[in-house]
Image (cartoon, rainbow, N blue to C red; front, side):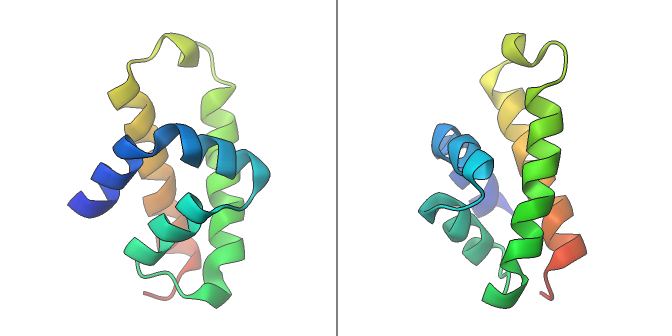
Amino acid sequence: HIQTAQFVIDNYDSLIEEAAKGQGEHLAAVLDIQGCDVGDRQAAISSIRGDVANTVNSEGYVDQKMVDKATDYYNAIESAVSKSCSV
């Protein structure tokens, strides 16, 4: 999903903040892009939160390049959508 990847790169800081909160317009928008039904979103967001928390708390995260951080977030989205959303 090129559109998803570009959205993550363009909105990374907002997405990280919203993942920590468990809600937000950018998080909703990226799940829209992925075609995740509204009823499936809470489970998807919980999955994203868990994956992102593990990544942010991992050793070396602070020193990662932005593109690597965005890739990790993108992978968390893809995983959450495949597990939680009926697309």
